[in-house]
Length: 153
Image (cartoon, rainbow, N blue to C red; front, top):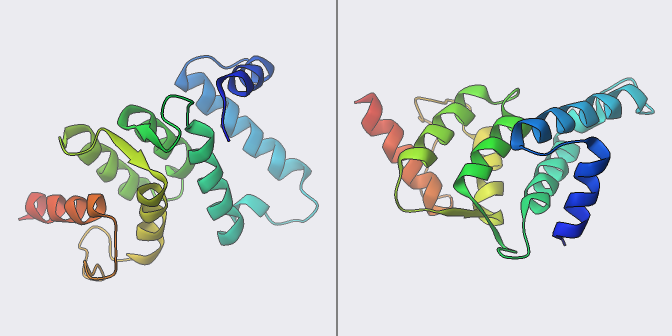
């Protein structure tokens, strides 16, 4: 479980204060991980390892005040940092949607992991021909797809 004390300790170690500095620190840690991994492949980029890393990034963003969800501003920064290089169009659209929508002030783990699943399963982005709302997506993603379709019409 995330706590402020641990966060402050880690941020002191990596010399990161604002989110932009945190982004640099995370990218540096990923680079170090790749450099010193035991195999020639980038372990964090394998699907199962990346899913674990993606879930960890969300858990790491939790606070004592909100132990089950993270505010939209933090989520937008986190998405850009963690998934921006792999799923740039999806992240850009989702961040834009999150910033203008009025229904959600926070994102929970189910919604966070749902977006990861969405990026991996909806290959036809942004036309959404493979998207089926009946596949138990979190409501925020159904609303996101509806917003994209309206935007494209």
